[in-house]
Amino acid sequence: MPLKAVVYDLDGTLVDSRADLADSVNAMLQALGLPRRQDEIIWSFIGEGAERLVRRSLGPEHEDRLAQALKSWRAEYARRLLVKTRPYPGIAELLSVPPEARGVLTNKPGGFAREILQGLGMLDSFRAIVGGDEAPRKPEPEGLLALCRTLDAAPAETLLVGDSTVDVATGRAAGVRVCAVLWGLGSRAALSAASPDHLCETTADVAAVLREV
Image (cartoon, rainbow, N blue to C red; front, side, top):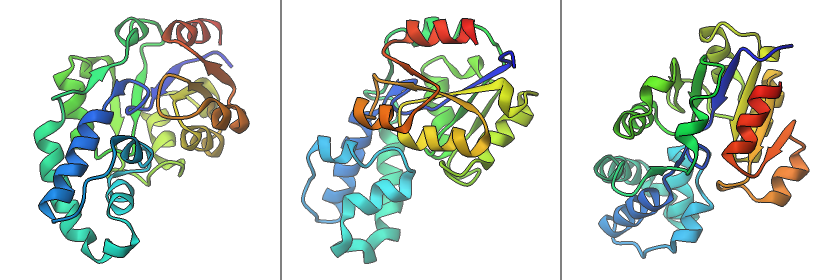
C-alpha cells in the first residue's frame, strides 16, 4: 500500500537527549544520597519509559525508594529538558519530506516530549504526539494504532521510524512497517537481528525510504 503517514520515535531518533537524561538521573541520585552512575550506563537504560529509567538507575537494592526517586527525577529533568538536547543532524530536512501526516510515539512522558519539540521548533511538524503516560508504553501497539487513526492512515499505510528493538516490536505488533535507524541508541547487531523492514544509516537514507514506499 502507498505510504500515507509516518510516526517517529523521539529519543535516539529525532533528538539526542542522552546528556540531559544522564545529568537528571545523576542529580536525582545525588539528592537521594546515592552514588553517581557513568553516563554510558544510564544511556543503556533509556527507551522504555521514565519509570524503567529511574528503577534501573536506582538498582534493585534501592527499589523501595522508587516513588521518591521518580518525583525527584521528574523535577530534575524538567529543569534540563533543553540544556543539551538537540535534533540529530539532518532531522530538519527529513521533516520536510512527505507524507505530511506525521506523529511522534515515545515512551517519554508526553508533556516533556511536547516541551522538547516546541523548544526545538519542531512541534508544528507533527499532527499528534503520544507519550508513555498517555497510552500503554511501547512495545504495546495501542499508542501506534491510535496515531494511525488520528493520522487517518491504516497500519499498512504507516511507517514507524525508530532506533530500538522496542520500536521494531511495536511496529510488528501493530502491523506497521518499521524503518530502524543506526544513529541512535540501538546497536547495529541488535537492530539487524530484529529484522526491520528498512535499516538506515542516515537521515538521507530514511528520506529515500519515504519517497520509495
